[in-house]
Image 1 (spheres, rainbow, N blue to C red):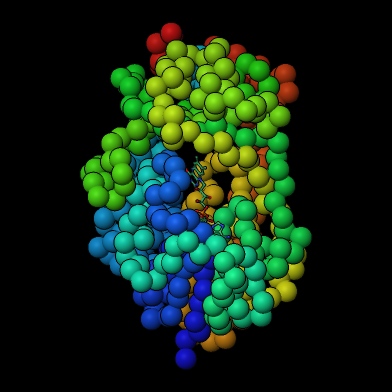
Image 2: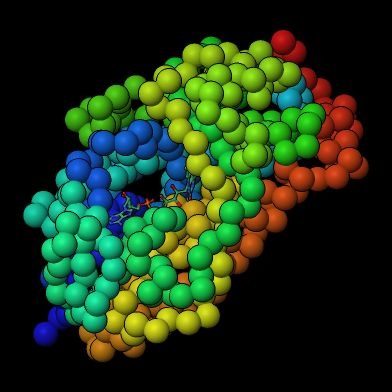
Length: 382
Ligand SMILES: Cc1cc2nc3c(=O)[nH]c(=O)nc-3n(C[C@H](O)[C@H](O)[C@H](O)COP(=O)(O)OP(=O)(O)OC[C@H]3O[C@@H](n4cnc5c(N)ncnc54)[C@H](O)[C@@H]3O)c2cc1C
């Protein structure tokens, strides 16, 4: 008989895993701490890459996957690394292939995944710990399951038991994130993400547009296109002042376009997130339990792999568990592969964060002065 599975957390990896298992006829239930789907601002987009797209393909029914992709941006475009005045240092260009990576709004993705799982997701159920095969909740209740999966994000309540010693470390850096209406953008920026590196050490600004190919009406409260942005700050610089004001202060020396993005943001959608760095697990003492996504391999948002790796975990773990055989063997095989690919991404993201925020005087000079001086202006100086 197929094992019963309890998943903690209805985020990207928990929901995709549930889809994969439901397709295989497995009895799976997802327990989510939030009281309802839209209780927190989660309105930002992720760039879903080849790994993420592959996982969506294996886990989802065709119509649901088509619905998700139909709202996404079109594949292709570029990513520019610039100085604070939006002068190009270098640019990465992505091919506009039909199955190429594309921007998908995270809330749209989550909402579509939720719609496809009626009766399987239980809101207002915060997991607290595991006791044998029982998952316990903050309200004192518990459920029994053959397999337990912690997909409960960076602050995982189950990590200490499932992978002791793998608590993530704080990088000391954080992001203030916001979303703003799309302004009249110069042509060079219409299909390009930007990481603008500031003149001061550890200062950078990121932004990109989310343009829906089809507006996701009915899936999210606000189906309008937007620009998502993030200001990189040292954690020690963050104060109790309103986040928008802090972001305004951080970008006062940046290009006017950047300043206007911060000024026109929706204050209710501005959030602060620390950049944590996952720590390689060395022990998995509960053979019937495992972790997916940020719960085990959180990474700083440099390189855009956190969500994709979470989706990849869900696809892989789902395939293993649906394949029959002993669930303990399926979990062990998943963990071997996952640690290998996911921590390669963690290392890369942490190294990129260091290069972009910490580079010494010479690196900073090359990125913010020397390389920009070699390129013509693609964005009018403000
Ligand atoms: C602004 C921003 C931009 C990003 N852009 C990208 C990108 O371009 N590309 C990319 O690949 N990644 C991106 N990421 C990272 C990506 O969003 C995360 O890596 C991804 O959401 C992790 O998925 P997850 O399923 O592990 O956890 P989450 O999606 O965080 O879900 C965890 C869920 O568990 C729930 N939960 C927490 N505690 C409990 C509990 N005790 N009991 C029950 N439920 C609980 C939470 O409420 C949540 O619903 C970005 C992140 C941010 C903040």
